[in-house]
Image 1 (cartoon, rainbow, N blue to C red):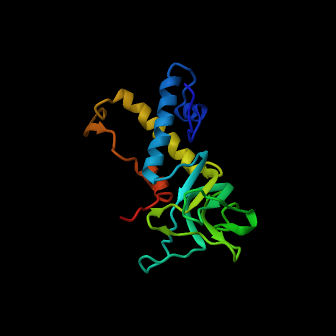
Image 2 (cartoon, one colour; image 1 turned 60 degrees about the vertical axis):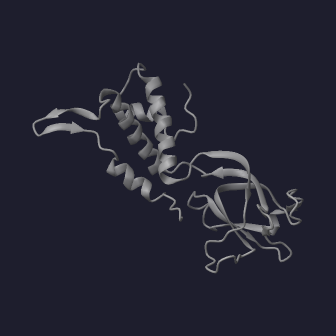
Image 3 (cartoon, rainbow, N blue to C red; image 1 turned 90 degrees about the vertical axis):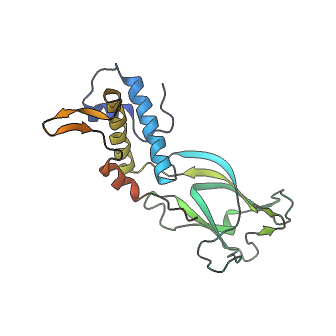
Length: 208
């Protein structure tokens, strides 16, 4: 099978496991894809790139006062680049106002230097702001672009290799028991502490 949006390659996992034959290639590829999606689920984001058009409500977590908004700051999901940015200034769901590249900037400003995604869109043209539609509530911003991360971080790749090997080893321990030693049973832990330490720095914390 082909690995879809995997965070490491079959060759990297086989090298780490010192596997030279191709007998278990399909199983290993399954493990790589499963590990990649488990990473996505744990951190609440993804590190591959996908092209999509997404609509946003205007919300700003830096605003403390309820029902108040900063009409010049839009928080977005992990963003690599913008193709088109449109706003629904009339509140009719047509998104008829198209912004030019000079109407906004992407932040953080050092994202490119550190191969990280953009997380904010800032309106820079005094004649443009992000609309708030409240009656009824509707998304007022539409962005078509590339979402995700510019590149897979090295430590995410390492975490994927470790987790893939961990999942592959479960085929030999379907009940979670690897074997028996002098001190008793040897079990597979629920969460590998090394993997957890790597992923925690990328985890998005949601507020209810």
